[in-house]
Image 1 (cartoon, helix red, strand yellow):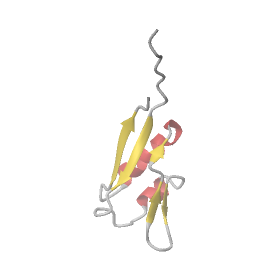
Image 2 (cartoon, helix red, strand yellow):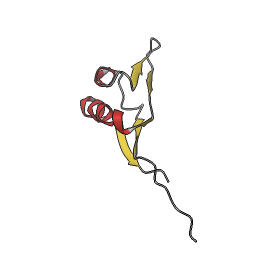
Image 3 (tube, one colour):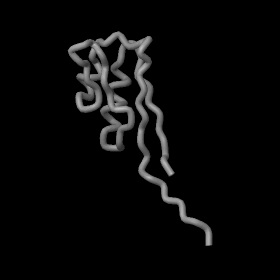
Image 4 (tube, rainbow, N blue to C red):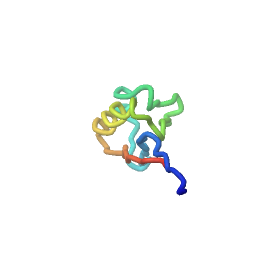
Amino acid sequence: MSPRRTLLPTSTTVSVDNERCHLYGFCQVAAPNLFELTAGERLRYVSHVTEDHEPQARDAARQCPMQAIRLSGQVTE
């Protein structure tokens, strides 16, 4: 009998190119639960988002004027 593989729900991986990011904050406005500009002028973000937050992550990536946000889909086995 072969082992059964179970696929977990698709998740989206978020990455930010710090060389391109100018901390304009469009991402925070689009997805405040995923992106946060700190008082020390640093960007904090959730790197793996679930399906329910994927639309906000995609919106944040679209709104970034520097195109610093990259999204990629993953299926975890």
